[in-house]
Structure formats: C-alpha cells, structure tokens
Length: 402
Image (cartoon, rainbow, N blue to C red):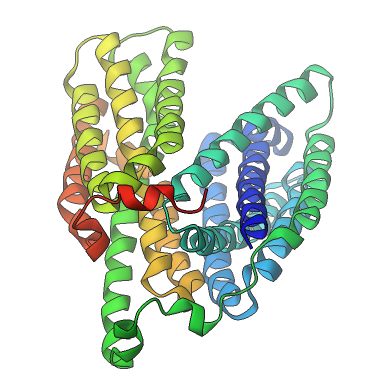
C-alpha cells in the first residue's frame, strides 16, 4: 500500500510538470505564432480570451467526470488530449484557425488541470499530511523546462510547429506511461472520515459545502487575479514607472516567479505545522505588504523586494484553496475543484485587463493598490479554511506517510 501511494504521488508530480511544460511550450512560442499569423497585440489579447474560455469549459466538464470515472481515467486522457492539441496553434495560418486551435487546446488543458488537482487531493488525503503546494511547485518547473526547450529549438532553427509537435508527442508518451501509478477512484466508504460526517443531514450538508466552496472560489479569483497582474505588469512597472532598463526590468517577473516557486516548495511544511488557514491569512498579508511596497517604493531595489514578498506571500494561497475545495466533499472533489479552479482562472485572465483599464484613470503603480485591497480581503476571508485541525498546530501529522 505504501509503495503504491508513493507511486501515485510521483505520478502526480509528473502530471503537474507535464501540464506546466505543455502550457509553457505554447506561452514561449506566442511571439513566433503572432508573427506567423500576422496579427496585432490587441487581436492576440482577444484570442487569448478564447484560450481561457476553453480552459474554463474543460474544467467544468472534467471535474464531474473525474468524480464519476476516477482520476486514473480522466487524468491520462486529459494529458493525451493536451499533448495532441499543443501543435494546433503552431499550424494556424490566420486568426480564425488560431482562435479555434486556442479554444480546443484550452479545453484540453483545463481537463488535465482540474483532474490532476482532484487526484492530488486524494493523494494528500491518503498521506494524511499537506503535499498540495509541492505539486503546484512542480508546475512551475514545467514552465522552466519549456523555456529551455524553446530556447534550444529556436537556436537550432526549428519551426514552432515542429517544436510544439515534438513536445506534445513526448507529453502523450509520458501521460500514458504514468497512468497506471494513479490512484483508483475512492469509494464512498473511504470518503467518510467520521461517524459525524456520515450522520449529517444530506441536504444541509450539501448546502453548507456548496456555500463554502463558492467562498473558496471567490478567494481563488482574487488571489489569481493578483498573480495574473504580476505576470503581465511587473516588468513594465520597473521600466515605465521607475525608469529601469529593459534587461533590469525583466528580472522583476523573475524575482516574483522565483519567490513563488520557493514558497510552494516550502509551504507544505508550514501548513503541516500551522494549518492552511494560517498560511492563507499570513501569506495574503505578506503579499499585501509586498505589493504596497511596489506601489509606493521610489527605488528599484524596493520594487524587487516588493515583488519577492508578493510572490512569496501568494505562493501558498492557491494550493490551500484547491485542497480545501477537494477535501470539502471527497466524493465530489473533482466538481468542487473545478469550480474553484475555474473562478481562479477567470481571475488570472482578468488581472492584466483590470490593471490595464485602471491605468487609464491612475498611474500604474497606483493601480496596484487594488491588489493590496484584494490581498487584505483574502487575509480576512481566510477564516473559511478554519477546521478542527486548524485549531491546534498540526505538527503531529508531519510524521505520517513518509
């Protein structure tokens, strides 16, 4: 049993890396595809909305399917479909074919994203200690791998479609090879942890769980809106507001991303000791301090410190929200994760646009005050994660499942 559980955890890491690599492979080829299709930046921005719409739809479909069929079926299918459709944007010759390819690829990516997160919830439950943040850290590793592959392919003069096809083909093989190690769907009996849970009135329990999940979804939207804003505006802030050189400004996002990855690598240990509510509350508060320093700091070094604190603070927030959604009702983990992830994805896409709209009214650094408010609201709303296990330190759990 212990060996199979370790295998399931390793397989989950593999799928998170795979998802990050496949999405990263598309992201790093965006400039080349934009030039090939011959579209402007505003047109590309509109087409990227279709990618998000497809992902949102895929999440809503894959969540319930994962609950009914099990992650062992849905996760590898999502990985295969995501790998197979990765090449489509590279083959697009006009805006219409690019739009269709992004919609399809986004749908398949959403299927993989939600199903692997639902499986991660089951793995975490079986381990009896927090492991979700570590999975999300490996997603970032996939993005780094994609950047390295793209750099090598570009240096070798490969066509974007050829690179995307090769990465997708390798992804298909990995998705199929890792499928057998995934956990089977949990039975209803395994999902009930206590006599109190099984005796709870079904209708009242469902209403309470549904309300809690929607609160988690709103928090995810706010947190991922902040993350999306950092992705697109961190470098521009240093360049346009503080007058940094382009090379120096590029390190702003690198600082944010590195801090976020580091935080996710370490977060599980702190969750085990202090509880998920504490991580969300103090993480969001730290992020609020960081982005406020970015907004008000007049020097480049204050901006770097601010972006680092912002990334570090946000790093543990999303994994805790996804984990809480999945554990709210393990029998419906996929559906609940799909709601939270779907709202979060909307926030991720909306973040850059919202900040961009605000820049028509105020300066860019002043627009970041909105992110401060969202982080403070998240810190206040962290109480939604409060459970019996959060009332006392959870260091006792840290020794389980090694």
